[in-house]
Amino acid sequence: MTMSSLLSRRYLLHAAACGCAAAALGVGATLAGGRGAFAATYAEKTTLTAAQALDRLKGGNAAFVKGGACVPVGGPEAIARLASGQAPFAVVVACSDSRTPPEHLFDARLGELFVIRVAGNTVDDTALGSIEYGVGVLGAPLVLVLGHSECGAVAAAVSMVTEKARFPGSINTMVEPILPAVLRAQGMTGDLVANAVRENVELVLDHVGQSSVLISDAVRAGKARLAGGVYDLKTGEVGFLS
Picture 1 (spheres, rainbow, N blue to C red):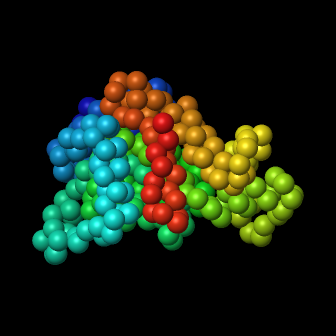
Picture 2 (picture 1 turned 120 degrees about the horizontal axis):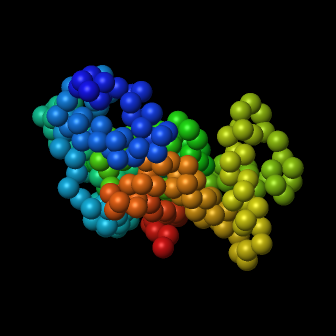
Picture 3 (picture 1 turned 90 degrees about the horizontal axis):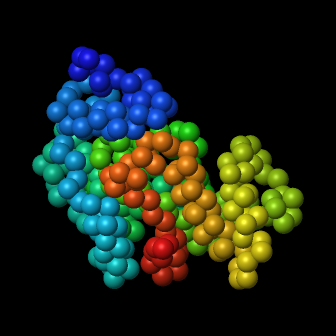
């Protein structure tokens, strides 16, 4: 097989669709030394384990809460070094809310987090493919799904369930994947929105693990780990789910 075919997007997607997660992950290993159209990194992959990556996020969030966030990039030379490749230690699926940028919340530098953001931190096929790319090609050992308190998308889903609310444009379609979380949260004690936020994180984690052969195989092989968390807008703290 030629290097160009190894680097093709078709090969990666075909391998994942056929359940050949090992082959798909092999493409990622090849990319480290190759220069094909699909190669977005020539950098060495992170050496952190999933547990170390999670500890790094927890430590970064602690620094953020204490006022130590927004680490300087390091100037033009540091920026230029990243042009040759990236080696993020975690994939973060987060909400689009302007108050929740993962790089700030976890005190992370450029190139450290591979971030997918959409209102309500849900995962469609495009987001799932991005997660697979982050794990299978870039070598990130951790996938974190991050919800946040008082999430507007979750609140909208709650109003759709409890008040039969409807929203303009494509907002209804965007909110619909969150409805199962609201239905699960309805029988719980406490604030419905807060409970639905947590349930939404759990359901997204389940969806990622069950919908992607590449991810599920990587988890079983000990190459990746799925984790969840909820960011508190008032305190700045991330509560990591067990």
